[in-house]
Structure formats: C-alpha cells, structure tokens
Image 1 (cartoon, helix red, strand yellow):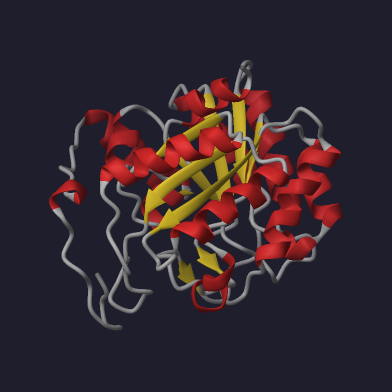
Image 2 (cartoon, one colour):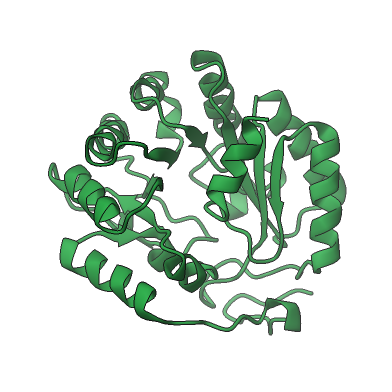
Length: 292
C-alpha cells in the first residue's frame, strides 16, 4: 500500500484505537502544563499517550520542543530551539515525584546546536531524579550526539538503568527518512555504550512500514545484536501529517509476532512488537527481561 506525497493512507481496522480519558490523564496533563514541561507522548503524537497517561507513565522530553533536525517520519517541531533551561532537570524530577513514578524515561529533541548535544542535561536530569525519588529507575532515549564519545560518556557517568538509541529504519532508507543521521553512527552509539558500560542494558527501536524488505529488516536485527543491543521495540510507522513520509505498508499483527519471534531467535532478551508499540511501551517489563 503506497501513499502519494501530501496524502495519508486510510488505517486498517487493527490500527483503530479508542482514546480513553480520565482523572489520571487530566492530572498529568495539567501538571505538565503548570511545570512548563514537555512529553514526547504529546509532541510525537504517540498512539499510546492516553493509555500511558492513564497508568501514570510519561516520557519526559527535555531541552525544549523544537528539534534541530527535520526527519521525515517525526511529528516533533523543528527549527531554532531556545537555550537550555538550567532549572528543567529539577522540574522534571519534581513532576515525576508528584506523580509517584518509579520508572522514568527521559528523552530529548536533537540539539546539534549545543557543544555536547545536550548530554549534560541528560546527566543532570538523572541526578535530579535520584535526589527526588529514592528507588527510581531511569531509562534514557538519547540522540546520536553527532557521534561524540565524550558526550555519550557524560550520560553514562550518571549510570542510567537502560540506554536507548533508536536505529529507526534500515540503512537504505536513511537518506529519504533520516537525512541528517547516519546508520553506522547510530550503531556506533550502541556499541560504544556496551563497551564503556558493561552490563548496562542497551536498547533500540524500529518503525516498520516505511518500505523496508524482509531481508533488510533481518540484517538490521543482526547489526543491532552485534552492536550489543539486547532490547528491541518494533512498531508501525504512522504518518503524522500529509507532509511527512508516506506509509508504504500497514503491517498486520501476525507479522509483528513473527518478527518478535525472529528477533528472540537472533538473541534479543526482550522484544516488544506490535502495531502500537513505541520506544517507551511497557518499559519496566522490558527492563526486567534484560536482567534475566
């Protein structure tokens, strides 16, 4: 199934999802607004946003809500971002404590305008969370920091519980989908994390339905495993607006199950695979599988 640029494909029945609401969702939404915080759930229009808000889970988006890159799959706004807010790490930690969170995911827009790519903000946020919440688990979903090992080591210094960096798609599609990123560089982020922090669970994620072949998908699984990735998320690409990359194909649930089983055969410890799966989906369960 192909869409022309400027159009959007009609979703199949298995991709139709009711959007619940309720007091817990409203509590989180109001708290984030009062605190001047952003979540990737809202900015990226995640299909699980309401489900996660209802269960008291949110993925905090630090360093503003504008990205310096313009990937053709992503709904996050791009442009010139504001300078980093030195008080943001504490506000994130206070919000997480208020919500009673025990497992917190921290991600960011890509900040190629900053010398360290925003690594120090990740480090400060991890430290602030640990000061506010005694037994907190912190997962970070980081950009590629333009390949800077120093920036990556600054994040690792704060000892996150899981380090996630998404490969997103197969190498052939990078020029059209992630023109400012490099497939090899993303693999190097994962392998460097494995080498510099032995024992740290390393995680990555992919979107299916952008035009990848079965062979390309399997080859990417092997590349990720070789780079030290033990946790993997696989979800359906959904076109955010008519101006983004079109959906090449909607993947039925049984194919997601097949790819989950194949990834486990290749050696991944934990795999979340399904049309609605995103990087932060069932994060605690994924982390627990990494410890087995």
